[in-house]
Image (cartoon, rainbow, N blue to C red):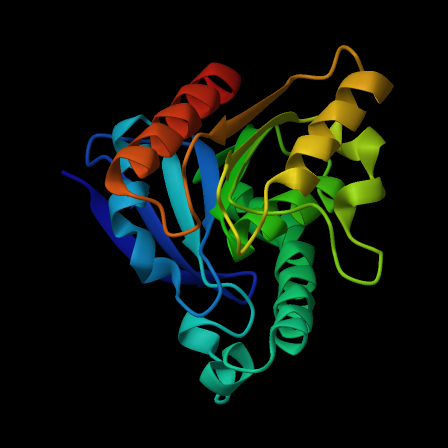
Length: 233
């Protein structure tokens, strides 16, 4: 059983999940959803994280959920390059909020500031890479079906030093046409070369597409939970 609590911290709508018997500051995982949905979409994953002993924090990305843009559907339906530019702008805004969310969770004595991680899927995976580059206090990061590569340059792809300081797991799908695995695969190769002692893992699930089959998603979540338990204790 999981206790859910909706609240706003640092001006950001959150959905907190934890076990009923969990008390005091907990190791925390911020969870970011995909383009066009919201924090409520991932109650199942938040419950899994809570059951593993974490304070699971579902975050409404900028322009989503409780602060949804009135024309978000139209923006999603725009030509691919235009829709991607919209998404990247919202990713940048969302990632910039992460340090304030972490501070607010610590101030409320909800999260152990020394054991905070981040995870996200699709658009949320983009947020993970960028937030890891701008929030040095994060201990662990899991990017699911995301990319560190932004159109027209920029983005976290060049922030190897920052990415090398966090325990980084990337999970991609071999046959993902929406977010091809090449960029994440290349990032991990570059990390291994530039920072041989960096804590990192790259998993490319054979045959997996962006809208993963159930078995593939179970594998992705098993990898996620194992990584976060290992690096957040």
